Length: 88
Length: 252
Image 1 (cartoon, rainbow over the protein chains, first blue to last red):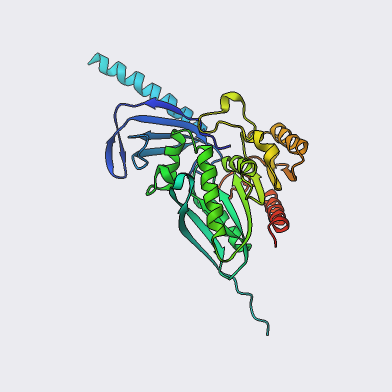
Image 2: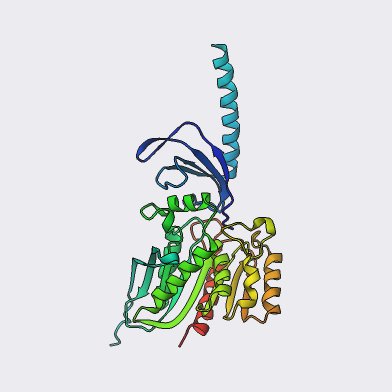
């Protein structure tokens, strides 16, 4: 069912929305019914500028399998990048 | 030569006063005629005031009801797209139950003010809206017939209660005075078949006029034509149950 359960992660960085780049404050992550993706459930990540400003948001709705691939990609990219940059 | 039957409806955004005196927006659809038409309040699911729920609102107009679907996330983004407003609402912990009841009462007052309204009012909600409909059935005495479509968390454990949703809707069962219809898929996990059975037992215990319909081969949200959960055969049958229920309880 639709829930209001979300995981929140503080963010440092930038995101680009329809009005250009903005400073990120947080990522809200949940697994629930998506708004747009034609799935029963999706892993949704809302990168938000300010939790109270609806327009400051970059959203993705992806399948659970996609989300797991993304986790692996992020971990791999971080490990590879940090190793490479540590050498320089 | 027989004249063709005239059909027409109007669908538009309206505004009216909701909880705390706030003006909120709602999507309204009604037949083009003088009435009288029973009213129906359509309660959208957590993802928001979306196209699918507005389509359902128009469906009620097609069937002869003056239907309104209040935007329960209006305050989170009066000018924002419904998905962005829903994201803010979710991040804040969802729609507060008291605020929902205030907006539902505002919807009742709006419907009652319409010259073509028959005086009867139904409510139907989907998913979290099903939960809110069960809540309204217990907390409001102006809903003549309520339809809970797969509302989860009608039964809630103590750790599922929050400041915004402080009481499990099941606790209001003794206060339900008007008929309630439940539509559920047997493959749903929330509410599970066991939770539906427990809710039914509570309704029976308190002598509530209820009907529960359970559908095999269907899970959560099986009316949703744009999702894999759609079950056309079960959905068609269940929609007929809904209109039969409203026909009996909202007529006259």
